[in-house]
Amino acid sequence: MTVEAAQDSNAVSRRKFLKIGLWGTALLTAGGITTGLLQRSSPEPAAGFQVLRASDMPFLQATIPVILAGAVTPQRMRVAVNATLAGIDYNLAHFSPAQRKMALQLFDVLALQVTRGPLTGIWSDWEHAATGEVQGFLERWKHSSIGMVRQGHASLLQLVSISWYGSTLSWEHAGYPGPPNI
Image 1 (cartoon, rainbow, N blue to C red):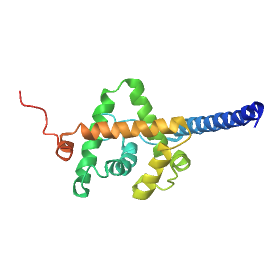
Image 2: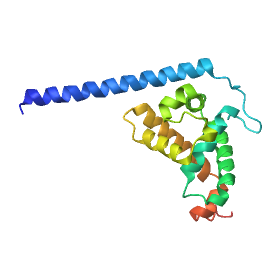
Image 3: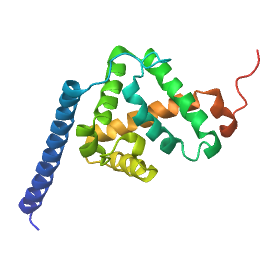
Image 4: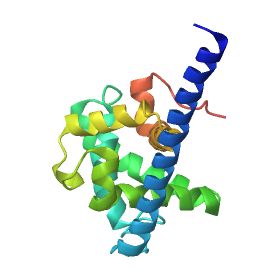
């Protein structure tokens, strides 16, 4: 293969990469705009929360158990989900306004069926999503060729992890005795 042929081969892969990136950006932008126009949920926090809205709950209640699988026993999962939701709400309340806005936009895109279906492959409501479907969605996002989707995956994992492991309920499983008494 000549140097020129190799460069042509690389140019095609660069073009393909840019095309995928542009399509991904366009899809996420369209999803964000669509969500903004069609979102029917109240921008007000759900009862008992400072930031999280009622429309955020089904998505989070479907994904948190999948993310925490193995770190929480099945018998304690409901308590862990509630503690993690409280932690997410607390953390979002203390994020910068820009960070909070981005997190809520991610939740909006994933709450609306018009954007959720194409982005996650889950067309039914989150309440009806099987564990395997949620696992598949998280795996696809983790390994996506679209950087913005991978960033959404990483952000979601970090937010859930920080919120769960910041809870005193997680300490026993992690073998952490808690802070020393002073």
